[in-house]
Amino acid sequence: MEFYITTPIYYVNDKPHIGHAYTTIVADVLARWRASQGEQVRFSTGVDENSQKTVDAAAKAGEDIRAYTDRMADTWEAAWRTLAIANTDFIRTTEAHHHEVVRTIWERIEAAGDLYKGTYEGLYCKGHEAFMKESDLVDGLCPEHKTAPEVVREENYFFKLSAYQEKLLEFYDAHDDFVMPAHRFREVRAFVEQGLDDVSFSRERKEGRAEWGIPVPNDPHQAIYVWADALVNYISVPGFEGWEHHPADVHAVGKDILRFHAVIWPAMLMSAGLPLPGQIAANGFITNNGVKMSKSLGNGIDPLALAAQYGNDAVRYFLLREIPYGEDGDYSETKMKDRYNADLANGLGNLVARVLTLAEKENGKGTIVRGTLDPALDRAAMATARTVGERMASFRFSEALAALWELVALGDRYVNEKKIWEIADDAARAAALFDLVSLLEAIATLLAPFMPATARAIDAAMLWKDDVLHATKPAVLFPRIS
Ligand code: ME8
Image 1 (cartoon, rainbow, N blue to C red):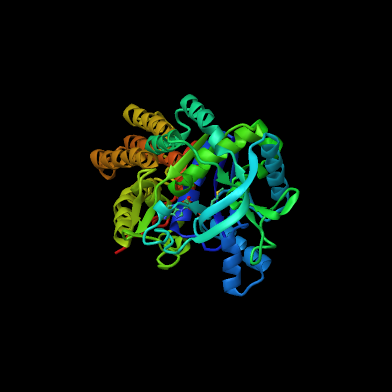
Image 2 (tube, rainbow, N blue to C red):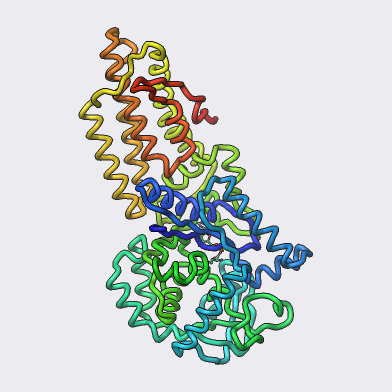
């Protein structure tokens, strides 16, 4: 495996909403892009099960915790199948092999002298699975989860994160694209420059959570903190040797969990004597009509319903084109329909239909043969391929798609200017059509990572037999929506 990309492993107490789908689609596009460049790809996603949230959600559902996690893990995996996500791995943190890797990492960090026992006294937000400061609260509540944090006083193991401040800053200096986009990297650096506190890395196992989580090696009264367990999934997937040989190239995450990935995780790896990942890419947050999506508001947008209505590829297109990567974005039905009608129905779909309707009329005449491409179109297609490549390398998906759509506009102009339907001369008409189908081929190739089914449909409509084109106008790719 040459290229290794991951998504966060999602909590099983909720079903996927459009935000989770967004991060997963980003990873999927990158994975498919790398594969289209000839690389071997490992693309892992999965679920984070050893959380107190799981215990609470199972109890609330009145289900046995194992049965609950099995059912929810299936829900997540099935969602990714329906959305045609091409992950090669799906990890569950209840798997025995993961537990083993987590214990080994714990032991390595302990052997490095980076774990010590202390008393934790403070506030814990179950929603975040993280400790909070008094200053984080609004009216005594976690501003995100609107719940009062638990007051916790217990013996915990602490990870000496404070000892890694200098090493992290040195690492950041040497890897100036470690966190993408750049403004997020500046936030991470500023946070680390302020100085780092040690982090509590275990919780007492007591009633209500006694059977859950991964026990601390040699101290079964403590469970390993769920984040110290969850992050290690990235190693469990390829195994130790796999990670040592080739750590993840990209961890695709949301901005909410960037510090865990860009600060705690590299420090854990340094402590354990393991190589660090290549990049952490953090997307912004999607709102629903300007409102934050939350379980309590019940306003999470279901990606499966959206895909059933507009098609998988249209959802992918919307998310990647509408939201500049790294920034927050908003979903609304109006925005979705506007993009769909303007860019897909009238844009790409219309060009494909125009060209292939004209090309289909030539079937049986044997006139469209492979020839020499119009140099201007050829140059434009090559320049676009370069531009798309550059923008993909810097996670600028929206701009990559914009460049691709300039090629669509070029095709439209070409059809209008040539007025192919008025060309009486067979050879001249065929040459113009050859230019256009070649342009469609170029578009389909670059489009494939973003909109795989659409690219396949375009390709399947153009069959070359002995260098003669047999074109079939495909069914309308994107019927207009009112
Ligand atoms: O944090 N907009 O899991 P999680 C964009 N288990 N992305 C969003 C989003 C939104 N509104 N809401 C969620 C966890 N996401 C941990 C991860 S990894 C070792 C452990 C996406 O189920 C985004 O990628 O809460 C965010 O980081 C992730 O879902 C959080 O998923």
